[in-house]
Image (cartoon, rainbow, N blue to C red):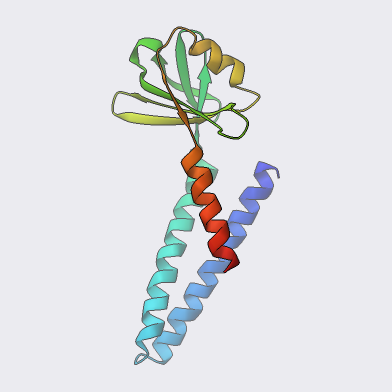
Length: 158
């Protein structure tokens, strides 16, 4: 799905949850002795608030984009360069491998006080491999995630 379609769906979901929140609050005002409606109203209000913040962040602020160069990582947002991270400032890089097909799927590292997570795909795999060529990193497999997913699949069939 395209980014615009996902944004429209997020706005519609937020509006739907907002309308449900208003209806629950209205019902509680008409029947103030029903404590269950108060609890449901508070929960829906919090969910609505989180969704509104997420939509505002997605539409107006944007997400960080990491561009890997040979000696630095450029951090940008909405096409603008915010700052760059030199290779020497990358601490504790961990390369996570998919335990099924043995391909790298995620890179995590620290720089300063921030921890970064980068999903590895066809578009950035070569750049990340070139960046990590002379960097010591830890390898990790995601076997635990597959195990947890298998347990959830078993429990969902019950």
